[in-house]
Amino acid sequence: MTLRTPTGLESAQRLKMIYRGIREVIERNKPTAVALERLMWGRNAANAMDVARASGVVMLAAAESDVPVEEYAPLEVKMAVTGVGNATKEVVRRGLVRLMGVEGVPQDPDAADATAVAICHLQQSRLRTLAREAVR
Image 1 (cartoon, rainbow, N blue to C red):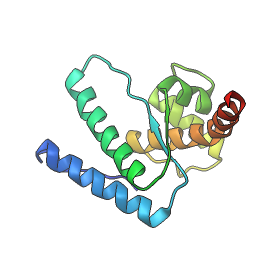
Image 2 (image 1 turned 90 degrees about the vertical axis):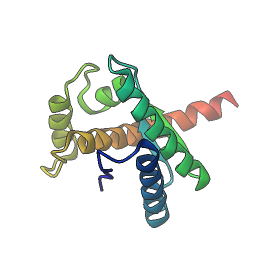
Image 3 (image 1 turned 120 degrees about the vertical axis):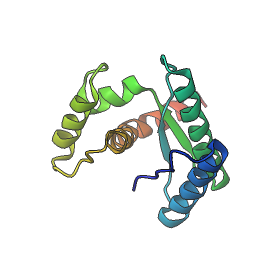
Image 4 (image 1 turned 30 degrees about the horizontal axis):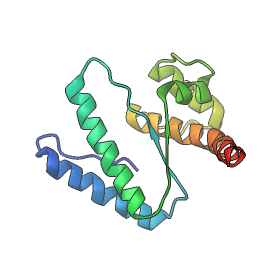
């Protein structure tokens, strides 16, 4: 499922829609974790701020549902799917097709990115848990 908000809608209203949509997905699917791609500040600061706000809303929705959140750097995600840290979106998509063995990888770049983050989380979450336990 891809959650979209109307482009012309006021920012606060878009965030409200994202929050409600994420809460609904969490309630319906009962995930054990929420995985997000960590925001890397690029050239477009305004766009990065919008993404940061949306990520914060997703984190809040997860926290209110007691669902842990894990963040992954773009490099980690690309490495998990392609073995190359500077892979393009198309290379990531092809890597997902190979990795998953199906042609059903989303065409939408944002949905494909989300799928890559999920794959990264499946690969990394156990290692992160073991590392946290080793520190205790």
